[in-house]
Amino acid sequence: MAKTIVVKQTGSPIRRAADQKATLVGLGLNKLHKTRELEDTPSVRGMINKIPHMVEIIEERG
Image (cartoon, rainbow, N blue to C red; front, side, top):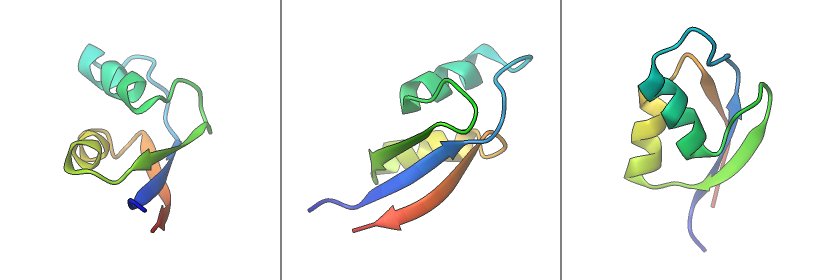
C-alpha cells in the first residue's frame, strides 16, 4: 500500500495569487477546513510546500 497524507485547508484563497489558488484546486481543496487524503509523492509535497500558509498536514499514513 502506498503512503498517504491527510491535508487540511486552513487559509482562504481570497486575495492570493492565481498560482496559489490553482495549487489549492490541484490538491482538491476549495473550502476552509476541508480535508483530502492524497498519495505521498514528491509532486504533492512540492504543492504543499508552495502554500504552507494555507494548508496543514494532519496525518501521515502508511
